[in-house]
Image (cartoon, rainbow, N blue to C red; front, side, top):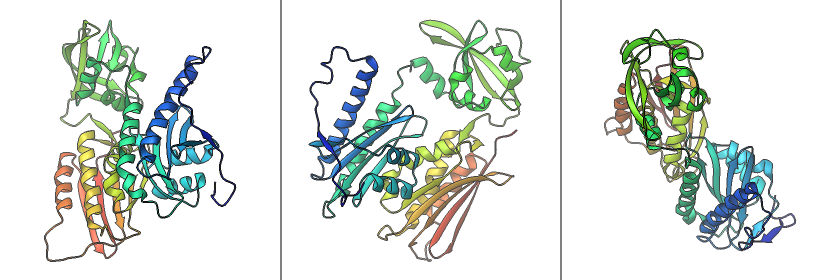
Length: 396
């Protein structure tokens, strides 16, 4: 939608009578509540820069819900395709800016993507400045606050319990069972079994998952864990965990051969880190991520986050943040022997040869050791710096 075309339709924002309709269904009430939340966040953002236009969009199911307002009136004719492209763009700034231009152009924009608890892009907050004189950069803190509030809403787990939180805090694959049936499992076990959601394991028989263990109760024993494409030799130890006021049996699995059973998603790790560092990265460069959703490594997710964080900060700090046109690309692929993550910064690279090794590269090497990974830094190009991480693949 372009400003030199007929102006988009705006409607007065009505906050008073949404819940006064006696025949309103529960689904409609949920939608109204969601829109009220988006309205409130949009007003927080647009209040920072009067005469600008704020957009807050969230993906619920297959349909994006969005509010676009100048604080007094709401835009009611939004391009659903552009909203979906904005969410699908993820951290690809070029694609995101193109989607925002489809919603309103010409206009200067700033935006922040919002992620759910699994690291997937589930929303966005943006500010449009049709007037080139509007100081929209000063709205970035408000954008981040609104994004944090929206992220907290998306990440709220209505089913969370102290028992499930404790199970997730264990750095090993673990499950809780009753009468030989799995009633709770953590994400570490789900990833090891080839699933993204621990709920896929609920209701399965423990004996159908673990071969060779002593009969229930298991106490301590060794066996094979059946995964989707293979099996893994594991050692199982039985402990106890109180769930719903009753004591249940819990199994914690460790490796027999001393290797790691942990599995970490590169895509999720990159999503977490780029979301955490979004304000820092966007202050000096644009960002594009090209990481397959199924890219996995053998290793701890927290260690992988630390390594990706240091590598990203290494290339970002090498850029002259005063230069326009700087860009960072994060990509991952399998070269047959290892999983490769490359983080490449291009643009104006800061110079100076009398100093020692770059601090970021040194810290990367320390984090890599914990994952049995290697780091290669290429600083031979005048307008390019890259960090190449070679990570252990998931054993088949």
